[in-house]
Length: 212
Image 1 (tube, rainbow, N blue to C red):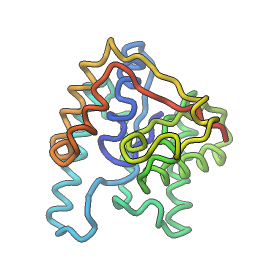
Image 2: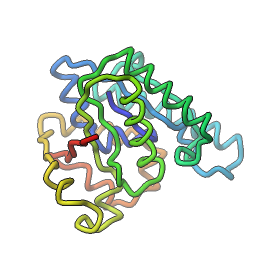
Image 3: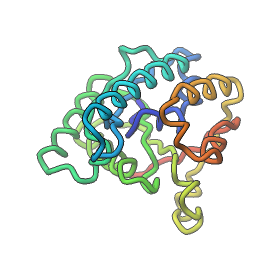
Image 4: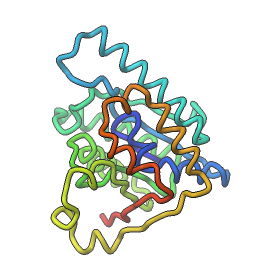
């Protein structure tokens, strides 16, 4: 199971892994926590349009990676609000994630890195971790970086134990699929730094094994 704060994080962070799993016939479930609406002060019509656009882009990208629409969930929390959920909203979100975990019984759970330099990303890690505890299931919790390497000096952000738990995974055989999936996110890539996108077009993905 892959948990993604926004529509595109799953492809940037672990699109190659998703494609490889699917090529080997491994079921992959993807859950998006926010609706991707962007700035909270944007006009409602624009927000509605971008929400629908990003949802369709996600379906297209994941189809390229081999994930069927029936395996994709949208929790549709307001973009940018995950760290600021009320206690009731937080409990509700954890309950939704817990239900998905219990339903699908994954062996591996992929989440953004706990220090990914983005509030929604770091909140996603915490929400999923709490849901795993509530679900009382045994899983490998694997963290994927999105903004970590772009926004922060690595040695200042990570402990030696974090670095020791790092694994580079070759995605050469599905690299083209990942590149095409990234290209599906038209509404996002026009606003992202070119160097940022370039960092995800290579033949390897980096993961961190989480201990909790």
